[in-house]
Length: 413
Image (cartoon, rainbow, N blue to C red; front, top):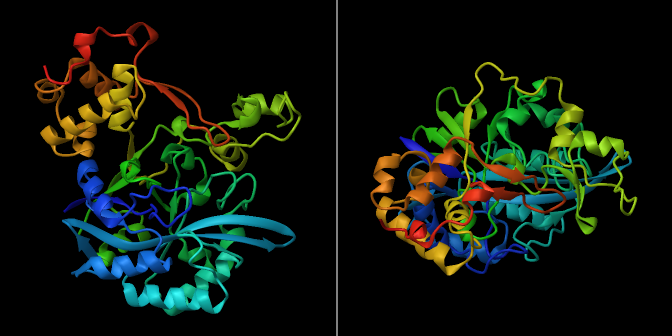
């Protein structure tokens, strides 16, 4: 059974998220995006947990269902703590096999003074190794995924607050870490440069803060729809059951390059070195991005692919392709109208971006939009890399073709 899965997202109870992040909107957008298995996110928040318990229906395999979409119980926790004289800030995603396990996690965190009502992604002052070991003592079936491992501020390898190795971070628990999330600003090819990650399953998730962002990165499995089957696949590095991951072009991620947003300064790693990693405008330290950090830790050259590595494809969200075809903002009414029409005709965004043939698409969609989809599939895009919290700027069409005639922009031909 082919399963598209997105494990990492948030509810409306997390900070800086959409008020529409409830189960109804998540189920609606999962169908639009073509996601069959969705993480719940935020299961430690009392109000969200109550809603999950009330609305989700248990199905076989320790999963749940709501309005035709399967869900797995997940949460992201933020740990800020000191170790060996340094402060670390790390985000981690946890998958739980059922509500009994979630209740044990919540009870254990509350007993240690955690304020779980403050945020869907609560900040905890515990060492991530100690906390995770506590969880596994409660239920050995809990699955741990270090989140967006290269993000500067809150990640295992972050340039501002991370470690230099898996063992430094996780200690004796390192052998239990078999899977990591690459994040929006890196793709598997960048991670293949580290031999230390060879034993890891590399996954990609949306980290969505609004329903329309789910599935922008996801994972495609060929296995049974069950918690144990998914976890077994992630523990054993796919072995033919994790088919591929769907990725941003990493330049689009908001921490790909080094930079200083306040001064609008952005550099690749080599350019940063010329300035001693300082902003040439204000002389403050640059925020060193994912590409810089990978270069620091890599023991292989760009282009190396380990034996048995799971493949991936790079994609740009359909709304962004339509917006670029029209030459308007992604949130414009025109883009939303065309997006909804395409989904109504073809079923879901995942199939439109990756599987449906161009001749079939062109029967109902303008040649301009189909050309954009083709260019994305072939990697023919231009992106000004993101940096210091700013997403990269995408250009699918050349400047010459960026002002098409109005008739080219009609959705239906």
